[in-house]
Length: 168
Image (cartoon, rainbow, N blue to C red):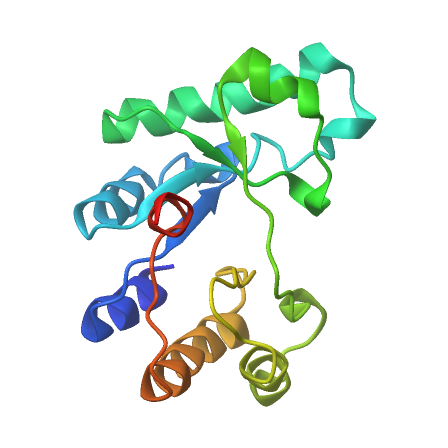
């Protein structure tokens, strides 16, 4: 994540990070850095659970626990949620006041360490208002992400956080 943050900072790009609550422990400084550098921080559940496969109470707890951890670090409420595996329970929006955010481009970066393959899948599909799904826990994905930014910026694309995309 630090390598990605460094690269994004060099390029003047802000993105949205959807964080898994249990992965934040011991990495609070990284979350503070994300916030300080203008990135949007969203929720990706506490244990990366498929929320349609657990009871409603468990799904709510997964989201609320992560919101609490993020808010405790950033001082800001969490408004956006990326449900693991892209499956969502519509009734949770009303109960928890969160907006689910899915993606329009998924290069399946977690299935390969081939950076060129990841890049090709993204840049050949990219269009206006697309949301690209990538995982910063893989070095190949981080390298690909920065190369994708370079390629798409040269083509005139602008990168924005999810809230900017939705509000504009």
